[in-house]
Length: 157
Image 1 (spheres, rainbow, N blue to C red):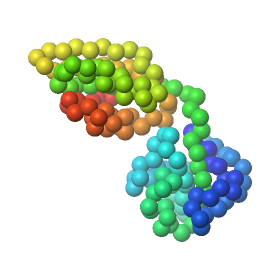
Image 2 (cartoon, rainbow, N blue to C red):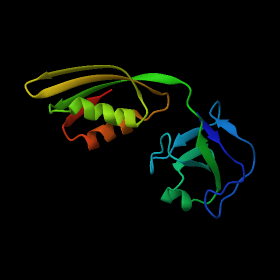
Image 3 (tube, one colour):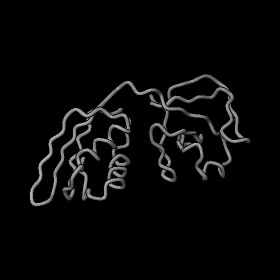
Image 4 (cartoon, rainbow, N blue to C red):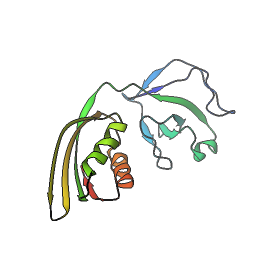
């Protein structure tokens, strides 16, 4: 969930808003902007659209600075609800591959519930079960792993 923080904080020099914190959701229409793809825990702001609810952007998104209208400060609510996320990682095997994967996962403060690794003919299949915040962006996590570990061929969720 996302909290709207409307307590007279500047988003940009030209935007200000007052009010109390409310939870965004439960009947409030909102969407994540495709231009900047915000995800937890990045700083965010909202643009109040006409008829389309609130468009959520990164606080430093170039597009938000060009929009005329009501901009509101947003912040992510501390996540209490968790979910399990299963990753099936296919990679060319190398020494330290599993350690590299687990180092990246732990750097994102994700809890590893189980790991199963198998190798055959120089290829590794690693199944990782993670406990993650409910609103984690699984695609972004996959991209981070793919970018930081060149041996990874594919990741399925």
